[in-house]
Amino acid sequence: MGIETEYGISVPGQPNANPMVLSGDVVTTYAASRGIRPAQASWDYADEAPLRDARGFDMGRGVAHPSQLTDVEDPTMANVVLTNGARLYVDHAHPEYSSPEVTNPRDGVVWDKAGELVMREAVARLATMPPGVNLYKNNTDGKGQSYGTHENYLMSRRTPFSRIIAQLTPFFVVRQVMCGSGRVGIGVDSRTIGYQLAQRSDFFETEVGLETTLKRPIINTRDEPHAVADLYRRLHVILGDANHCDVANLLKLGATSLVLGMIEDDWLTSATTDLTVRQPVRALQTVSHDPTLQATIELADGRTVRGVELLRTYHELAARWVDDRLGGDVDDDTAEVLRWWNTVLTALEGDPMDARRWVDWVAKLSVLEGYRERDSLGWGDPRLKAVDIQWSDVRADRGLANRLAATGRVEVLVPEAEAARAMDEAPEDTRAWFRGACLRKFPDAVMAASWDSVVVELPGERALQRIPILEPLRGTKDAVGDLVEGAPDIRSLLASLAAADGRGD
Picture (cartoon, rainbow, N blue to C red):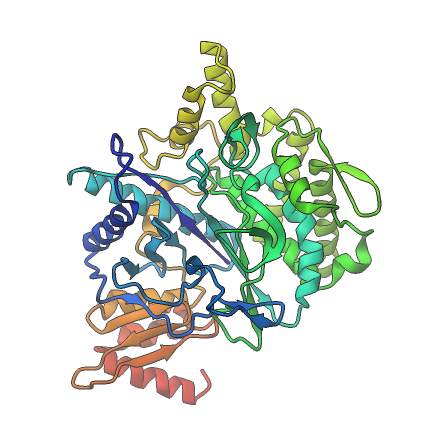
């Protein structure tokens, strides 16, 4: 699994500044600080297929929106691979950090927080280069534009996509109750006054689809596995918010992974009554618009439930499924997710403000209510929108979320020192380790990389060599660490990898 986040970008006092140029400055400035030349460690587009649809067809390039053509290299856009296995690039006029692949939710939080520190360092370095720039880990500018925080989950190709749609959609409608980041304003342009749970919910228009920047769907159908296509699919999730609270971020990844496990196992089909939600898009927005958590949504069988109640049903099903499949042999990661899921839901089921240490929208609301009470502000006051933006400021001394964490007012699961190490070090238990290790040890030889390949140049040879890494759990430190560390040059590494592959290692 992994998280990719587009960061909001601005130059204070210069509303007409070019965000594409500024985003490029963010990428190139950070890359230079790590000794990475963009032209050297660029992205390998060979296996990209953004128009392939999981429902069994390809969208024609002639009818696709230009923003969907992510398989075409734009030489004007900065695009680098980092030694921690992540991708840092310009996407739709935003700097984006795509974390390396990880195998558990806590590591997902670690390398997502590493991305925050990457952006913070870029801001600090650009502060000395007029006009400077600032970045925000959020999902809307409050004026009608939204930008994504996407998740990716490796799944079995055997799981029918129709089952994923049917059984995941209700969960996504209500997941925002514990994972939403909160937003001042209702509607895509925030024209209606008020406060809501999630930043992204008002920007969704349909239930299922291939698009990500227009006609946004609750279930995205992009079928681009970045792995062995016959075995795997990559579920691309575009619904989520950018989280600052570690617990909410952990639950976003962990609870979703558990629900996907139940779907792969076909557990939900026989273990419960139908949880299908009528009019999911409307229900998504109904849930988001009610911070009291009292609003109800209608299920297909005619029942009405509150979002927190449906989320509790999913938690109970997950706990039963884990007990049935693992019994007393539950791994620590699964146990942690189930424990926090129950703790957060219990708080939200009572007084939602009791969850302010763990849930972004509640923590933000508590800060906003403080300003409202102190200065007698209505929800339409522009000062509250300014506080909303300042919440997500990546700077340690200016971002309100960062200041709450520093003063112990929100739960911190991943210390900043751990995230700082992850800025340069890749996860050791996925192929991201091999990608990062090649960049670290053979920087002059690596010409490009992607999630499933590393492209290298051998001295004296005109043709580049592509090293495929289609299996996400190969290329780990345990599997190839000795080969990489023992190779004096890139040619020796290729020879050692070929010999190991011939032995079936």
